[in-house]
Length: 315
Ligand code: ADP
Image 1: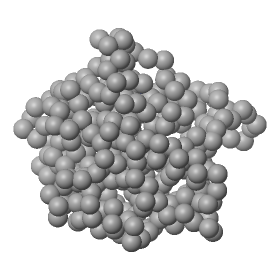
Image 2: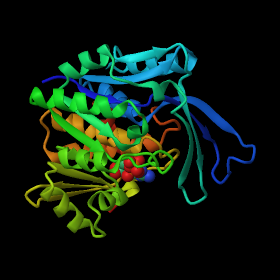
Image 3: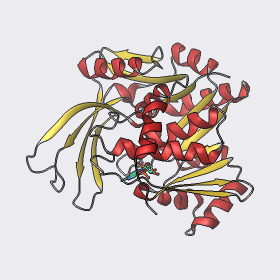
Image 4: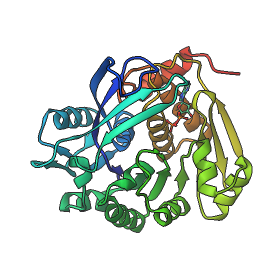
């Protein structure tokens, strides 16, 4: 019934090339790479041939061009991306802790991404969309609340669906609206949390109990991301499918969850069973971590089929 759409930050990302440096000391950085969780997600939807569109804002600068060209190349409708003459394209700096964790320094609020609002072009895109994917990280942007409300209503009025990835970044959730967050969880036809996010969304410290509680609140299906260990699917009727992770060398974990979610959703929207969709999603997430740059590992079905055939999985 129409393309999958997202709204939110389109950024460039500049990242450390080695683990273990703080941002207070000089180090070798690399980039810029096209980035922003919603942009990574929708680029992967486009790569898979699913109809795709994004509501966002970039500056009239090279970082904006870098992103727009990539999104267009991969089949994403960028008609609802505003180009700001006053604000530069947003950016994120990433460093990797020795334990594999990541820290981000974002420039979103004072960049073009922070200026996103419900424009005429955004309404036009929302009015023809079949699915709205929402990410928790974007809710720190002032104008997103109105866009999510408008687009959610428009998509539902056309018989479409929604998905929600809590994508809680400690750097971005400080100003988040807890009530809105809960409502987005409750309304999600598909919820895509990591383990910690699942427990936080339910306010319960046990995985199975959290899943049960979220279904009682109206969630349609839950796909849990488990990093290198793969993922699990939970159906509202109590069914469960586990999918072991692929054995890969992790070069850069940023973007795995977005590629994973985009692939699962697109497979399901194309009528695939949850188990098969989960396998493709696992492959997309695993392949993405083997590439430096959050959007550099996006892949179409041909590449994913080859990856699945040629890559061992954890037992
Ligand atoms: P997020 O980025 O949202 O925290 P994850 O890190 O769990 O999400 O990654 C999403 C999915 O990508 C995982 O469920 C898994 O399928 C795949 N993945 C991520 N990291 C790895 C890894 N190191 N090895 C294999 N697969 C991975």
